[in-house]
Length: 222
Length: 222
DNA sequence: TGCGTGATTGAACAGCTGTTTAACCTGGTG
DNA sequence: CACCAGGTTAAACAGCTGTTCAATCACGCA
Image (cartoon, rainbow over all chains, first blue to last red; front, side):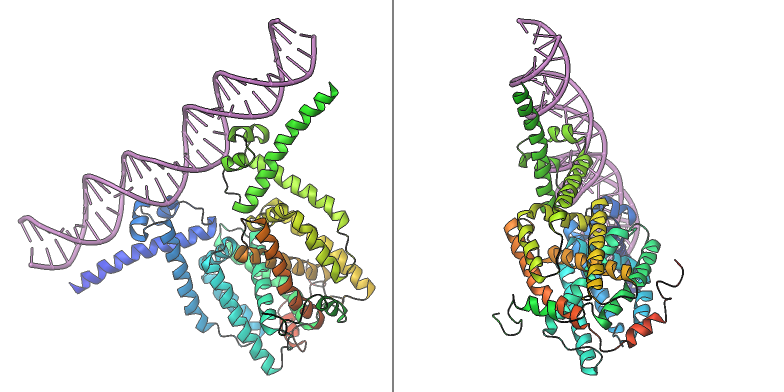
């Protein structure tokens, strides 16, 4: 009894999960404008069953968001960085298995919304901790406004990646997505590291010129 | 005769232009999923007239792209930079008048497509010339791979701005858009200039570590 | 064995989409 | 004046959208 109970519950949950996973993949590939019937067909069910399980299309997307968020939290513990360049590669390799979820995240960033805000908020928190540790260890230079610098770096790196995939991403094939991701890192990591290492300008004149227009961030109002 | 001829032609062209401008504004605010009837209503015409003038929705978008591109080219001559911080402000102030076009460009970046690719290509070219001039003038540090660095900077800055407006942009109101744009520059310009001035890392160890994984960009294959 | 509950389906719904068609109206031309 | 071209409109088209409804099916429970 309990066996068949579990089996039924498992099967029922399996169907809902299958629909959710199909929705994540389909939304990630075609955007959130994809129709319910397309998602349903991917999961070998009917459109009516999708709304039966998730109430509405918005409910389906909310379920997708929550699941992606759960996976992110689960993976976050493993991703505690150590600061070497090899870790970047390792993370990237691991990402390949989670390609649909990464694609969904990219589509969320592209569209906006709560998940996207949460994602970059979490990225900012992680980067802040990472940079603070680096600063304490003496490998990262101190900043006039560390929070502002972290936010800047988070927006730039996430936005740059988003733009890259918006322009060069063959979002239909996860295999192509994997290649595109590797090319992105290979092409943009060297100049990024060079910029982080040596900067761009030879002196402080432009920085000082701009600081004359705006008050010092930590001092002024707010 | 010629007067009424011109008047007729002007009126006819004016209607098509009015539809195009309405489409630019509407697409910029609601995205390219906006319906033809919404665009038509904004221009006080019928949906049928829109397709009569532009053939199809894709034709309408193509006309919008071309017009935006033309405005960009026209404005490009004025925007020849001089390298001071004040020029950034001036450009920004001028942008406020072109808010619908800037919004349309942002939406193009968000959606992808030919215009978006052309936009960042042009940004890259401009930045490359700008950086080369700065390098020659001795205010910009040389790079291991100047093209890669330029591409990196273009993607990062454009993508960061895109992401900013995707998350914080009240894309309905052009007034709100203006405020959002100012806040973006005020919040992100200081850390950007700081990064450009002093870099982020204290030494070359991370750069050297990464360069062990990939061949030197100018030397290796390609 | 029968009851009942939940998964699942197919059909129908109203509303929107881009596009087509026929008619209308206005203004310039022969 | 008649005529034709082109701007403009309202209506209709097929197709898609999310959602609803009734019916069917399978299975656990008493």
